[in-house]
Image (cartoon, rainbow, N blue to C red; front, side, top):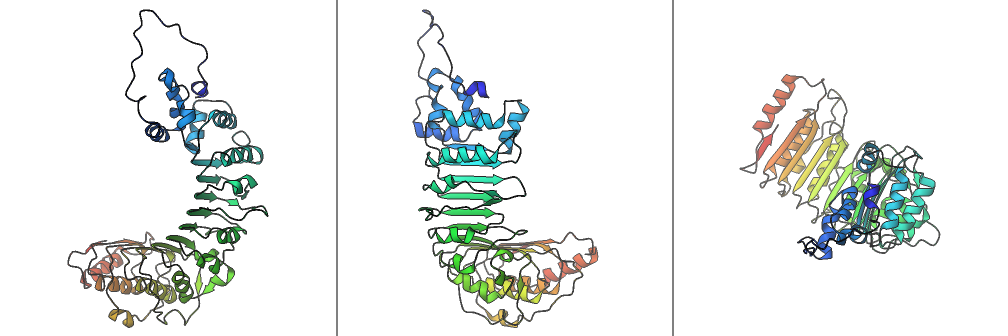
Length: 414
């Protein structure tokens, strides 16, 4: 690959009998079209276009706008037995002359691949001068990677995705002016402060299920432009571990433009006796709701699910993944008579995963079928646990078939 990336040295003698080079169709395409083509090729293939014709020698260095240094890229280098990967990346960057709008970089703690303390700092510094707008930085190691200060000078950033990285903003950092999306997977004590400096965020995804994070609810509540939100409730501030469904709903009430919401309930505890107070807050813009790792055998969690669904009158897509609690765990029965008289829902698609056939789950499905006149399909996938006997699955299926459906076309895929 490196040979292909090198500028071609010397000239071939032109034969007096050789016909003049005809202008090929691809070479006459506008530069923005060629950029579109090159950006869709793996980097090593984009570099090979330099041998197509004389006019193509340096096109990839001028027109390519996206760089992807991921596992596939490093696997290709290992397969072709190329020189040291960090040297390859360095030489690629040195040849680039155009603007780099997007970069994906996976960082390893193997100095034969990447020395994060030197190489990454140099590469981020390079990207900060190239008007980078979309950056993905994944640290493939258990110890979080401390982000270099050069990252905070990338003021053109609009999309930032980090995995197991830790913010370390300098005192002079006052936020990214135009960020639209921020995805953070892993722990970070400074994350809350960074979020407050990005008031224009439209997409926020925080997934720190097994690690600590200190993002406060009021920091998220300030993001009035937020349209997509994904949260692990366990890893907000410590008070959230003993919160109520009303706390969650009040948070969502401060996000008027929210269209898609995903909540992970793993490790989240709810206070008894507060969730069923029936708040009147509604989220008219919310179209898609996903609840993950929610224990529907627990009365408070089930009530929270009811409250969230009832608060979304225009909800069209609902996905619920139950937790991995044992199917024979005791069920906390919830009375849901009040929900039977609520208004109709706009649901089109419903998916349940890891159900155990409990009465609580049946109540929720009954409510959704009875209140969704536009429902087209409801998919129900039972829990794979061996504790659920085949006859229990059959019994649960027979109960499902007897439930009233408000939609004449609703299908149950079980």
